[in-house]
Image 1: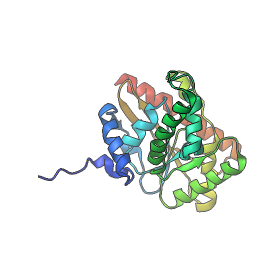
Image 2: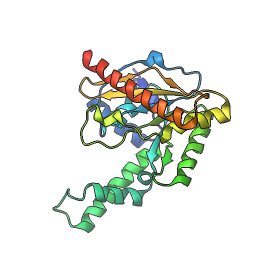
Image 3: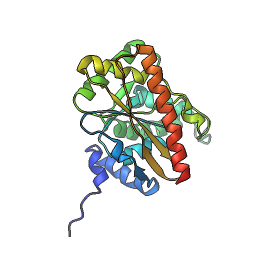
Image 4: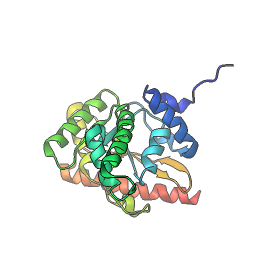
Length: 241
């Protein structure tokens, strides 16, 4: 008897390594997905998910019921730059290793990480560089025009996983609404997606839709504010059920 591959895996990249890692992670990140009925699949959209440290990204990659291209920090897509980031992150870890040995170890890890991240054909994001930020928007609009969904994690860093971890978003991603409308004449949908490790659920809410009648800054703030409010509502829904 032939065993078919789990349906969800068909949304993942063709990389065998990425699929193998996903199959292992799936054992530890089982989630009940709700809100599929809220998704309009007639055109590409932006899915905005909470980060929740590593829980949000892993859960979204494994269980979001659509194909997507994620926004990923550009430094994590280059092996050398990723190694530098990891060296800073794990500066106080693995203290039994000498600096050169630690770098060799993390350089090997970065090779794996970069392969997996690049296999998703991500849109690179570069913070603090206006020119490259414009490039991110352009590449994103081009992807949306081709019918490719985007997955974004815009929340500002937080020390703990609670409401505070997603009450404040960076607003730059919301510029996609006006840029997409300018190129297509259509109003982009932004779907709030909440990953709750406590209830082991991934919930997709009703979309926030771009309104071309709003001023640029006003529109960005409204989209961001409404997404944040809906995130809080989705978390409450998870706690109630």
